[in-house]
Image (cartoon, rainbow, N blue to C red):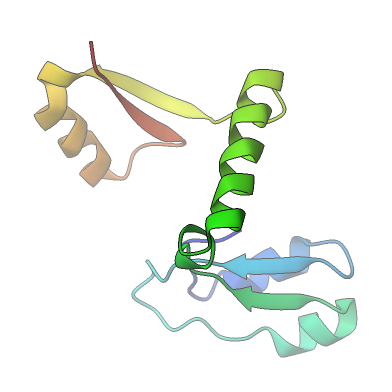
Length: 112
């Protein structure tokens, strides 16, 4: 599940198990994203584009997605990686930290 794209898509494909699926949901890389044809053929990979509107514009899919997320968080099967938390009063610092690209995981802004 990749939001960056770019030339490293080949590295992602190479690291995947056979018959896996790469889901590209963004193009944050300023570089071209080449299709890793030889790796995809050798490993029978699928590369698929995805946009969130596939879910939010479909009421039933959206309901199922919310249920999946809520269940996963409450059961502990979904474990988001949180890099750092900021209080709402520190929103400017949170934005600066986000823009620095130092984070590994999510940046949380806490509301009282």
